[in-house]
Image 1: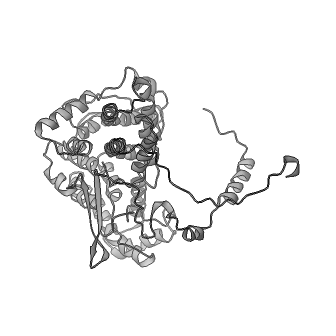
Image 2: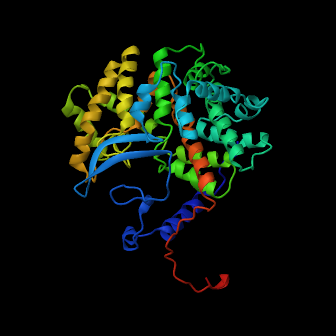
Length: 451
């Protein structure tokens, strides 16, 4: 394997030049009215577009003032709570919600059946793709493996650069269908070639839902319980879309606006999602909870739990980042509706798996963390558990390896990305091009011999 051959001393010197010449004083952002991270000081995102796909409610206006409220999430105008409550016991929530986000309407029984068949028919990889692409370069970074597979699929598409709406829709449906296979097979290759585990490749079954097929392909014995499939199905729905303003969805919009092809757009979105500040947050939450479990002697002791969280917040414990992972959100204030929905399913699954004690610790941290944060930090809005706080715990109970946590997120979120790509294609022919204020002053050029 090729290695980085750059001279370490030179790289360090170059790095210092970057720090010196790229630094921008934080005061200048305020002076020029620049919204860092496209956010106001209270965390509200700068308005950059319009969408029909989803919306988030975190504040209400009362007597002319913006007041925090319990969080709500809407897919195409439907409250996420109503959607989840309305799912049947057939674990088809993913398929039903994907239809809604892509096409704007809830499907009838026959429409859902046709869509399920369409997804199943597209769940076939090109001949020898698993062997020649996925197995040839296994990696512990499954998001990179997934991205590579997506880009390689473009080579098998004779119309990969056709940006007509019907072709883009066909490509999106195909990728939605294939993401579970690309992700799980990528893990199987890594587990076999890098971890000396057994190698097994299970083909998805056409009559099963997306959630059921993920568990079938991942497990050596291909078995799963009804509750396991149901919880994973709900997890996929909750991660499918989120208001349009998140980093990876904005990336989807930006790259789509340039006229790029579907495979490149999704690869860019994947590259955004893999970052620990975005899709990788649930991994850090699990690691933090494992640390707390090993540090706190009595999870029922609120003072001991709070003391541990204070050390984490003060950069004295865990990874010393000063972050309590899974707490707080860029938009939500009093509550994240996805976490609220998840909590009831998590408790049921914890009982089935004999992990009620672990759930009690999660509940204790969820209760104590907002108080600890409010005491130590200046808060512009409320702090509550977000969906990442529970999702990693769910995946661990389902036996999903840590390496697959973010790819599972991608399996869900590609539906939202696809919906936003389609909406951008329908409504705009302009490239997204933000402005930056240049701080450079003119400099006199000097010949090399005079420098």
